Image 1: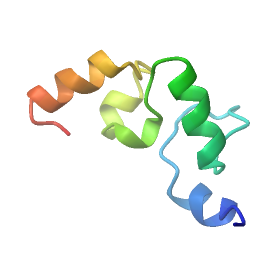
Image 2 (image 1 turned 180 degrees about the horizontal axis):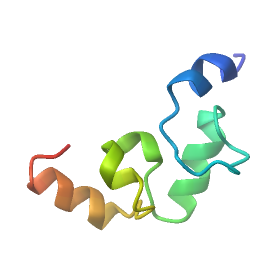
Image 3 (image 1 turned 90 degrees about the vertical axis):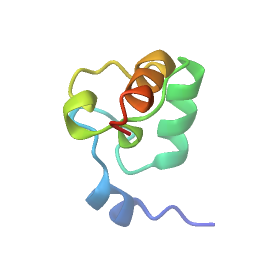
Image 4 (image 1 turned 120 degrees about the vertical axis):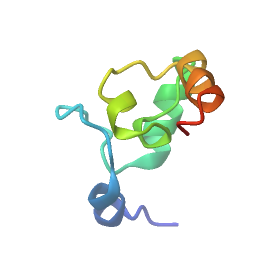
Length: 67
């Protein structure tokens, strides 16, 4: 399967500009899971900009009904 890098990049919500994984979802997900995190696309825009991508932060957002 070919990576749909251009399509992925167009809808990537990551605000970390120097990221080398932008648009390469499989690399992004693998990177964040190794760090016990979720990628930016799992978070609402305001929460993503905090760069707290932890499972705990995501769980708090779910409990608050923000995700």
